[in-house]
Image: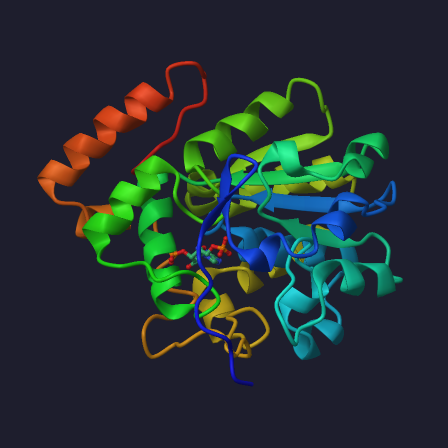
Length: 291
Ligand code: A3P
């Protein structure tokens, strides 16, 4: 299917967005969450697909469906509204499975109020800013539904300014971190912890969801969710997504903590650290850039 030209970034209530995520705004804001819905919220490139796949296996076991339906259809993207594709809201309204797993990249202030009213469980995944920026850069290069990234240096400057789709990384991770104080059903995970010890984070997810798979089932989930296995699996590697050009960069790219060291110059790193420190003075949220 022929895609329109890459979308442009614009300011939307103080957050940089493209029309692919704002065109369906009324329907998104009026979305009716069900009490057992589970929301997976992330800044783009923080490990959304990874945690979506794990949650899908924990909630539904390993079913035939997982061999036939890509993870991005099993876990619809709430605010997505791209011409010629069904919108996230339309897909979710058709879903009869319980629970529904729902993906969003919205900053916390944009979440439809029904999720709070229904007191839904929410899993947030955050990733350190440096690796997150690198991953986002490669994603924007290969995904024609994203704005042109330009060169690495200009991309990094815009990352610091928050001129990315879904806005500022800083506002996103801290906004959701603060929400933990008032919404007890919010599990805040870190990409770095998941890489360091996937089994431990799986246990945290199980107790949060209230599921108790056997040790063998858990080991199977861990195994299937390993980077190399997800990269080989056409239902998790996005090879079926027509907007992505894998000749430029694969979706399952490296899956590492610390790849930023291969991208940042010494000067960029100093500038970024200084900016990061200034932007994170008000919060006790801490990240690891190596493990
Ligand atoms: P890299 O580009 O650094 O490789 P999202 O799903 O939010 O778009 O995030 C994609 C990032 O998560 C990519 O990072 C991808 O490789 C990484 N990722 C996905 N599955 C993973 C896994 N099983 N283990 C480690 N990293 C994974």
